[in-house]
Length: 201
Image 1 (cartoon, helix red, strand yellow):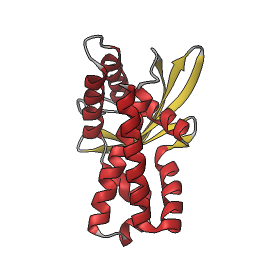
Image 2 (spheres, helix red, strand yellow; image 1 turned 90 degrees about the vertical axis):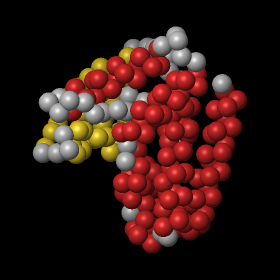
Image 3 (tube, rainbow, N blue to C red; image 1 turned 180 degrees about the vertical axis):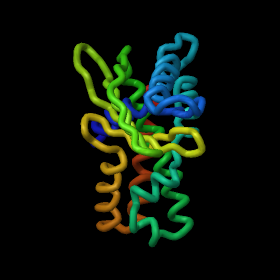
């Protein structure tokens, strides 16, 4: 499971900060983002913590964690209390951040090749490929246009959807342990990842 999440978030690293001038296409948004994030990862002037901070700031600006949380929890969002909802949003965001911090440690001069774009109204999907040692991993971004900006709301790596993956696993956890049980497990996972990432610095 953790290897899958690391792969997903290696892709997520290239999906941050998708806003640009209104005239740009979804593919141009993604291409610009790829260049911006690669510059952060490749900059010799930044230490590990500075890279993490810059990538985190970019991602936080471009993802609506509340909307993603509602989609992932589905009916469990409607039955959760306001306090549980806020706790989930915070823990989910921290889980994503700590996971892509781990993914950043696996970066080794990979490059990105742009693929096709599909657009229908205010929705779009842009395909890219992470190229490493002769292999290509397909990474697709689903975007939604809001007020002339394009925002990523899901990332699919090698056929695995971030949103669908979490929705299934969290639904099963809530069914087994309840909403409070899910929150406890998320808190424990975040704490474990924070410890691991701190040791890796």
